[in-house]
Length: 207
Image 1 (spheres, rainbow, N blue to C red):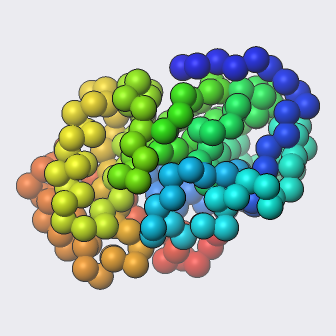
Image 2 (image 1 turned 30 degrees about the horizontal axis):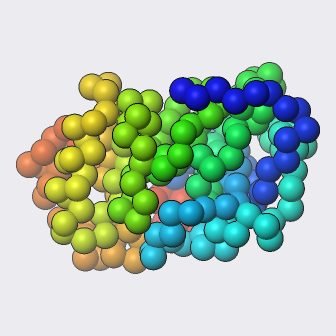
């Protein structure tokens, strides 16, 4: 993974950061501190956090300031998301999180070289801006958002690019859940290397 120079004064545009439960994927149901960084050049039409796209409208915080708030809570999983976090130099942030005893997780479409030291990488490629092929090897978890029927074929193409130990998840786009959930279930039954991911935090109405 690309390693960037350390800089304890590096500032990040932070849309929001909060303590909750991980709602999706392999760590669903576990306590986690979410750090949502501003800035995105992917532009998914169905994005539910479009207010994160413009990095300039969000307050800038140092890694140390972010971690100082996160460590007030007992959970020790920190999930960095966006926006698109790979546009930032994340080495100072992962250094600060590890020094405070956190596991570092990232959720990314990975269209840029990845920086930082990560304990878990969720790679969720998007059709609007493809991930760098070299980033696919880093994925611990591949999460494909199913918006229409053509996404199943697209999911299989990306599944062939990740390591054998990578967990494979299909997740319906939230507004298409009534239409697509049964199709996902049928697909997984026929292709059991895949698993179902649900946005449990939305069903529970928590952040």
